Image 1 (tube, one colour):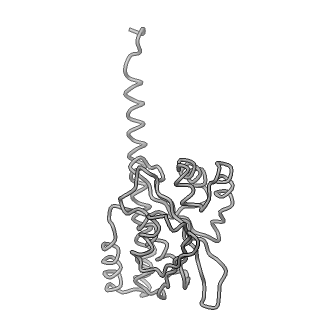
Image 2 (image 1 turned 90 degrees about the horizontal axis):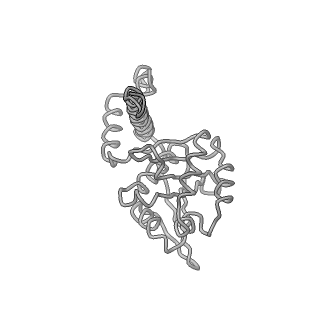
Image 3 (image 1 turned 135 degrees about the horizontal axis):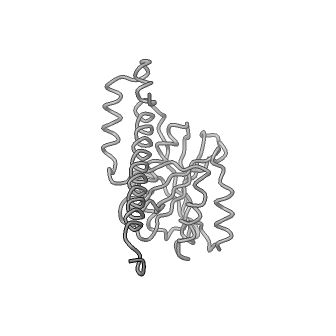
Length: 231
């Protein structure tokens, strides 16, 4: 029994709650599925970040960084404290990564910082915005009051995400700080996050299994074809 079925069985949610959650999910981009990553995905994260060009590394990290810095950054991510979200392409390669980092609480409540990167080949598909929306939903459901982004003011992609989300943006010395006040969690927001994660997981599993079947079939047929010089 999955979390939704269990919640319904014990009376924690109603059919109306489920319908509203499904409607909220359908309102998002159906073509961009965001999956939460874990510590065993570190090698995939390293591969994604190392593939970023010099300018993209500058925009993502706020400074030029070498490979060893990226490797150290990925190794330092505490998956028990923070959350990392990813988007896979048709080849099951990570093409978008969002890091949701919990910061110290302040007088206004809990604060989290969000950073995002999208591979050059996957831009223009709404991946960055989808990662932000997923992070904002997660923050809302984990009692974060303010979602914060820091970037260079010339980072057009981040500025687009911030303005689209209605964030308050402050500029100073070529840098920008953006803030979004998150509403309290409710039944619909919690169900929406569960649905999003389940759909993304299922999609990944199905595509991975299809890839493995194709690879097995290809190896099988190659093994059946007589090699040159054997006939």
